[in-house]
Amino acid sequence: MITLLLAALGMGGWATWERRQKVEMMGRLGLAEKEREVLRLTAQKKLALGSKTEVKSDGPQGLGAEHAEALAKEALGEEKPGAEEAKKNPMSAMAEMMKDPSMREAMKAQMRPQVDFMYRDLFDLLGLDPEKQEKLTKLLLDRMNAGMEVGLAMAGGAQGAGEEVKQRAEAMKAANEASEAEIKSLLGDSGYGQYERFEKSQPERQQISALNGQLKDKGLGLSEEAESKLMDAMYEERNNFKFDVNFADQKTMDPTQLTEENVNRYQEQQALLRGQVLAKAEGILTEPQLEVFRKSQEQQAAMEKMGLQMGVKMMGASKK
Image (cartoon, rainbow, N blue to C red; front, top):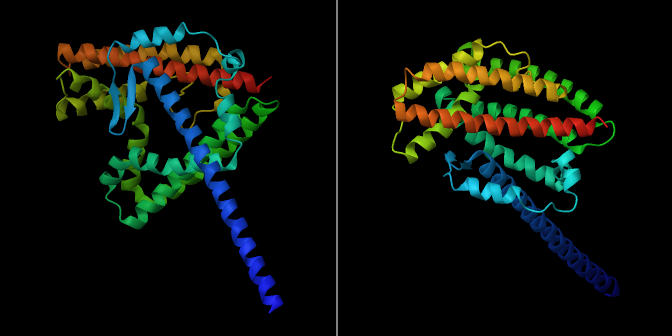
């Protein structure tokens, strides 16, 4: 009886310890979720103010000119402690946070809905059965995870991180090639051709999505025919353009090429390309639509410049 009593007390103590551990873990998870949400909202606000484009659940939506005033006020704000270090490597805080395994898992968990959103049109186009669609989703998720690891290596800014970035980039390139072979085997020649066109046209689809949001705000929505013609014109002009370094091609882009010189040259060539696209758009859009398109292209250029400059800062910090 005494032995049974001691066993019962022991089990009760173990259960109490387990409950305490569970409560503590739930508290940590809740804190991590709050921190992640604050980070997400801050990043979304920065992007919205800088580009006058806000990403919503149904795609990017154009913001009004009044947000320029908010951006100007923010630019005049006082520098916070540690701001100088943040300028050198603006993602260092994110990299520090992502050292926590639970945060990494939380980030990976967020990738599934991103893939579902980004590729939903492709899934509809391919008409895959559930099993094949799940296999394709898994391959795309693995690729995004590999890209995240390279991004975090860049963001760390630690001594020797440059070599780590190079190694990870090479590993990611090899993994992407293997992934492409698996996708081609899964989809067949016809399906892979649709997938490849969808992947290569991502920059144009993102720009068209932002443009549509801005046109709808002004009651100038595109017809399906005009949208298709504009999409094809933008895609063909970009694919026929010979870049010295093409940062738009995510499959071949080498993070170690993110230097100030390369980025400046890329932006010069992008300006030339936008001029060619605008000339083609003149024969597709009405004059009011063309004016909105011109401004939308300028906003896209500003977003791209901001992202590339951040990449240059991260790579510069990692090479110290």
